[in-house]
Image (cartoon, rainbow over all chains, first blue to last red; front, top):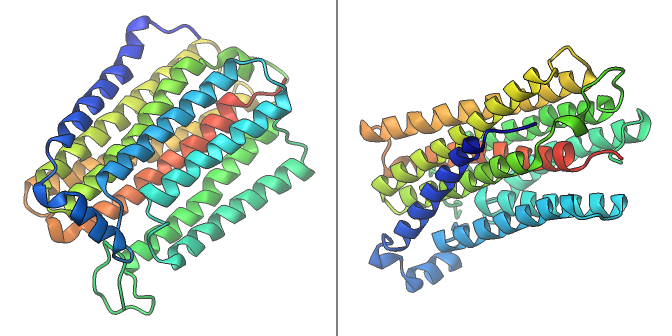
Length: 137
Length: 198
């Protein structure tokens, strides 16, 4: 598929705006949101993380995506490539669910509820791949 | 009993707000919804009797940028939640609008990709790859579209004073939905785009 070059500019402009917003937000944190408040909140059961933690998780997610795409272009053994991509994908999934969706911090009941659906989907996947002949390779 | 952040002090058997419980139940059912489509895609992807085939269609650099945009929208969404939880309504609106713009950017990329695929001969009824690909990614795009509408409605409610610091759970629920749409794309990007049969 051939793309006109200008098209890639749309998401790049969106990302540049995001970068500006993130940079601006560093100067917009109120004084009471300093390190003391952060520590106090972290010790509070069920408290959500600080914005700075979210930004760190966001950077990790961006890095993992970059590694995934880089691996795609490297001549790797197919099985090793698939295993690595699945691990990286699972890591990204985990970071978003545990930190951004707060399952790490919220009631375990919510985690169990979500796990039920997730395990069901994995079971469905396994059955399809094992019995109906679908394959990742 | 200590309630988790974002919960309202309602008397429920679980100690949790029922809306939050319902949202997680919905997301659990959505796992099966998308799991079925992804499994169907993997099952039928290689059973085409006519082209075009997946390896001829994908533009990985383009989809990578789109994936990155959606991933970053999860970051802006969670920053919007953090903003309303500390009472910064203006910050919340800024981050919600940023999330909606990133979502719209992703949708624009998807619309372009669909158009290109169609122009190159891949349609919903061309072959099994086309059918399963468009149904899976189309439903995902529909979910993103609904998410963008929810985000914009929150911004509108905030402007009209109907969304206040006390309603942070509303933003949290919208965020849960948005993050779920993101994690579904994480799986789709890896299984559908990056992992291709030899």
